[in-house]
Length: 241
Image (cartoon, rainbow, N blue to C red; front, side, top):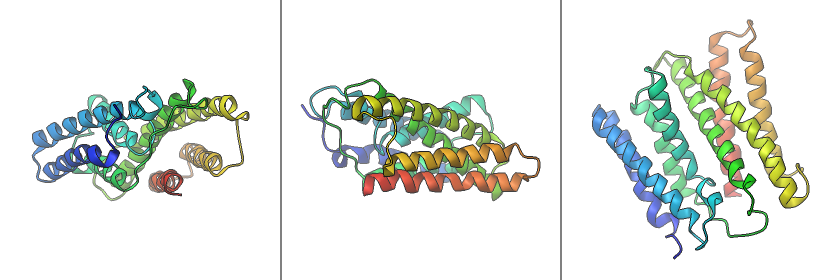
C-alpha cells in the first residue's frame, strides 16, 4: 500500500520540531529534548514510509528531497552533544532543524518511481553523502554566525565544515559513477552539476583561506556563515524550478 502523501504526514514531524524549539526558548530543556527525540523518531518513520511509496522498497526515497536534511541535522546535533560539551540542545541549536522542517512543508518533493537509473546502490549513497554534507555546512555556518554575534564561543564550526567537505567530495565521486551508469557520462554541463561544482569550489576556497595566517578569525567566520546561504539557494532552487 502506498505511503500517504507528504502533506498528510510530514506536519507531525515538523510540529514536534517546532515544539522542541518553543520549549527550548522557554528554557524547558528536558521537554525540548524529549520533543526533539520524538521529532527525530517520527522523521525516521516518515523516511521509511517514503521508501515504500510506490509499493516497492526503494532506499533512494529515504534519503532524497527536503525531508532527509532535518533528520541529518538532528543526528549531527545529537553526535555533537556527545563529543562536544559546548553544544547543547538550546533554541539556537534547534532552530536550523525547525527551519528546514518547516521549509519541507512548502517545498514538497515527489518520491522516485522504479527505473533503471535508480536501481543502483550509488543513487542512495550519493544523496546520503550530499545531504549529510549539506547538514554539516548548514550547522557549521550557523555556529560561525552565532560566534560572530557573541551567542557562543567555540570552534566546532570549522570541524563541521571539514567533515562536510569530505562528505561532499565523496558525493561527487559516487555521483559521477551513478551518472555514468545511468546516463553514460560522469559529468554534464547541466544546472545541477554546475551547482555542485560551485559549492565544492566555495568550500575548497574556504579551507585554503582558513589555513592562511593573514585571515583573521572574524573573516573566517564570515566566510563560513555565507556558505549555508549558497547551499540553500542552489539546493532548493533545484527542487522549485
